[in-house]
Image (cartoon, rainbow, N blue to C red; front, side, top):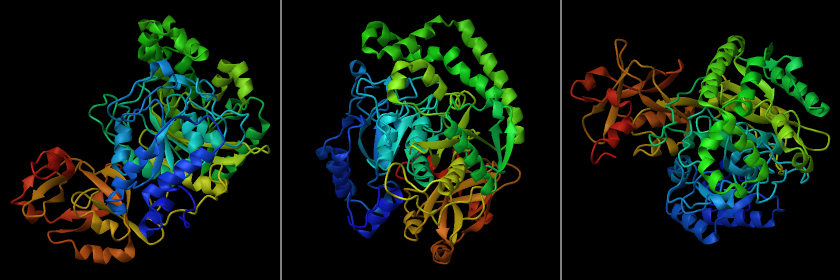
Length: 603
């Protein structure tokens, strides 16, 4: 373990490939770190060494190149199910033990990640402070008298202090962004529906997101690539495609619309972050932020608060004494809204979305503080609702407006407490936002979380923030069949150091065929007169390895330009049209995986 510098995903995978560490040793290291850490009220349930080693040894029977998150330790906010581990949602009387993991958790486990345990939160994910929990107020990783931010409090602090490589939180009103800002880490709030919420205790079910905390944007992107995906069992899951950011215009609220609640250092640090964005090539446009602020007020002052009662009403009526007093006060206030109020709220929101489109005509990304200030735990406990409301000033609008966002560390106050901004994009821009977040993060701070580690340089396989060719001698290549992750020929990419960049779809002008012969192979053919949108994967491969890779590709397959649904073009595998004459067309299935799933003996 001598060469292991951190729990960064790239560091761990590198150590596994060199044979200098095993998953069992990482489990023991993670347990030792948790035992030595000061009590910040991070945990609700820690899994036993026996359970963790069982999973680790199963991984050791497999190759690190089989699984994208092989042996990567993570933690889970305790309103998200992990099979056979209690889910409390921060309320012991509510606790239940699920027989299966949440959809998003299972995807991570299947990819080789190791779940260390469940983390503390503002009860029922109601709050942005991290102090509304019977398991104790979670303490900031930089200063124990300050709040950690919430509601995903323990998840953020666990990553910031090096207890896990990444963590899952949830984000309805800012719970995946505010704790990231207060603990100097990346917080991704994906587009609504990109990650399954099956197996998540609802807050506002129509708005809830599973969020990702990581030390770097690159780690968050690696987790997102595995965690995302349509879930037929989740009625709120959506089939989303990546939407690239095509410009560099950053929208910043007019000065009168910025609020820092008396925190002059946060105001100064935001000005510094704006200058940093400009130094990276962004242009700043001042916009009218009023539609977004008005939408934010609907979340708690409008009928959406009633969704929290819809989720918990039966339990509250049976066990009102089991709730934290502030949580009960917030949720019970929702019973004053009627069905008429709900429809009026929907109409108001639609009008605000339309008004907000004027800003999107001017800019590509919104740039705001993640929070206007940070408070001591004692101040929050003395004035819990007003100060919590202040913390949601820049966050509460996002899910109502169907936007994606990434919280990015960008500086420190003179007392050592972190400051961060949020990059906000339209639905589907998650991956592009993370690319920009990585650039801004590296240009702004030198410290990873609360650790004595520096921010690493960009990965040589990192895509440019504007979809330009990959740097460091790598190029993107699209695959649609046996070379995709988990398929029989994927090893040909992995053996050459290939890295999965993203999942995507072609433009709706391609036809897909199952070619005769063994092994089973697809043939992708462009058809300007029809066709459909086909699922693909984009991998990064070293240019120097491309020749040897192509030597393994038999006719009638070859390389050509493939147009993506987003409008981008990428080099990828296409098929000579003559080879499809005796092949079965499977375009209507939408992809090779769907074909395999419906073909006995092929899955």
